[in-house]
Every structure is written in C-alpha cells, then in structure tokens.
Length: 115
Image (cartoon, rainbow, N blue to C red; front, side, top):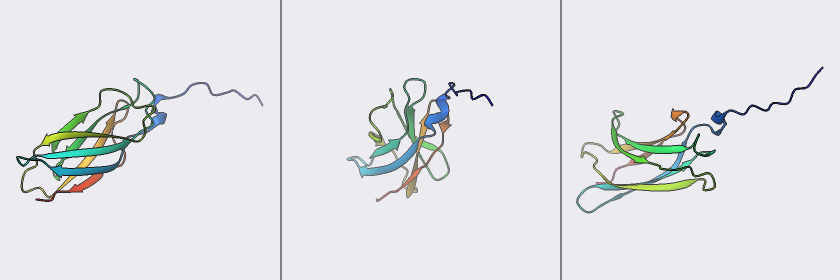
C-alpha cells in the first residue's frame, strides 16, 4: 500500500462566521448602535469574515457593517455600527455574519430591542 500525503488544502477549512455575542444601545435621536462579536478562522485575503447584518424578523436587512480586512490574529473580534434605524414595531433583531467564501451562514445572535 502506498501512502500519498495530502498537500491540497481548501480555503473552505475556515468554515462559516459565527456571531458569538452582540450588544445594542439606544442613541440620541432614536437610532441604535450595535456591537457584534464574530468568530471565524480568517486565513487572509482569500477567506475572511467580511460583513455582518442586522435583520428584521421578516428577514429584511436593516443595516450592514462591512469589514474591510482579515482578522487573522484577532479572534474573536468585535466591531460596531451606529445610526441604525429600527422601526417601532420591531422588538427583536438578528445579527448574522458573512465571509468571502461561504457567504452567509454560521451561528446567528438575537437581540431584544428595549424602547
């Protein structure tokens, strides 16, 4: 039996982005600021967490925070976005992550809106 070493490595090994925590604060003027903590095995520019979204219960996107670079040596990491308008009839939002290979996926995180 001949043993052949495996040398091909898929950039998909990093898996999907998990949102492991999130916080919400009401801002002056009625908008909100959300801080989301993401976990992803960023591998560099070819495979990294590149955004997170705030979703209404019906799935519509209320806000998106674009992540401009890989966070290879900073895991998990937290990024914030302010000025988010959340309609008064919404009492809960979901935060989902996205990466450059898998798109959307992984664990999401729900936040309750205090009015």
